Length: 346
Ligand code: DAH
Image (cartoon, rainbow, N blue to C red; front, side, top):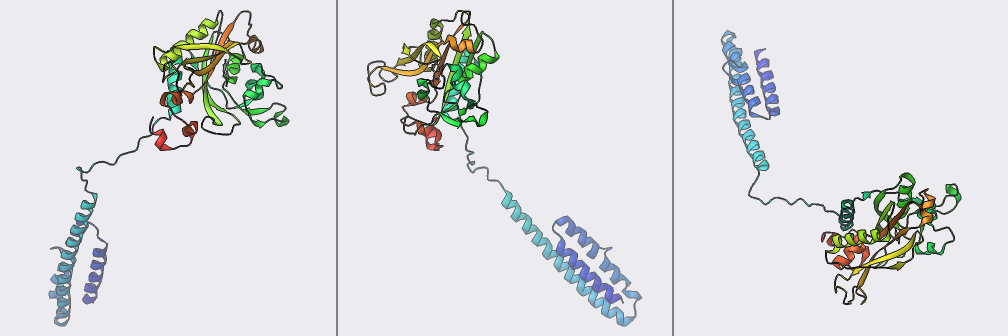
């Protein structure tokens, strides 16, 4: 009877001991089973009431169990201490080790360039606006004075999204230039207007060192009373000086774009030879950087701005061209081929 109680105690104690994982629980266990008021002591104390034969058997077994549990306790305590030391060592920090470098991202050279260009024009009072990259034929060509059969359409090798009538007879394309944003702005607002429109443009083009099928442009537009070609020249000259240095020279020559009259191209004196003639400028001393002109009266009429009252100038430039010139980059495809060895240099 009493012997059964001792055996129960033995198996309960070792079960519980096996599950213990920290020293506080272990101490509680010790007090419960081996303490001065513990279960085992109580059994030993009650031996006196037992008949002699049973007393011997139970006494022997209880004393044996006491020794076993005490030994198990010591062993368990040592194991827990070792585990603790081990995990402390594993979590320990060696503050003398050099830190792991966190790789930092950076702005793409095109983004940096866009920020610089937009910053210069913002300072001159231009507002930055954006337009859609998937555009209607109307905004890309028609409203810019380039009807369907106009030879100037050949200037813009177009990527059509849908040139047929699926879109209700309105051909849709990836814009080949940012000029359509001019029309969208003039449709929605009245002069005075001063905006620049940065963004992606697309051309149906075989790629090589000087051609990409996607690149960036910045478009500019100013419309108000009494805007003249002198305003165009002054604004763009100031822009060139901000971007390429105070002592930059500029040259304007006649050019043709259907949406301006007159149209001009602007060149700066060569960054390398300063006009003497070298490989970069093809020995001319000049480097063309943008197209511009006075907004065509026909374009103003389309958006219901009276060309008898208002006039304006517009310009458009390729963005990658500027870092290409500045840093002597010899392949435009480097910009969008995601090669970190290239991108990290900016
Ligand atoms: N959109 C022209 C192009 O992609 C660039 C351009 C030329 C824009 C003259 C203009 C401009 O606003 O007046 O080649």
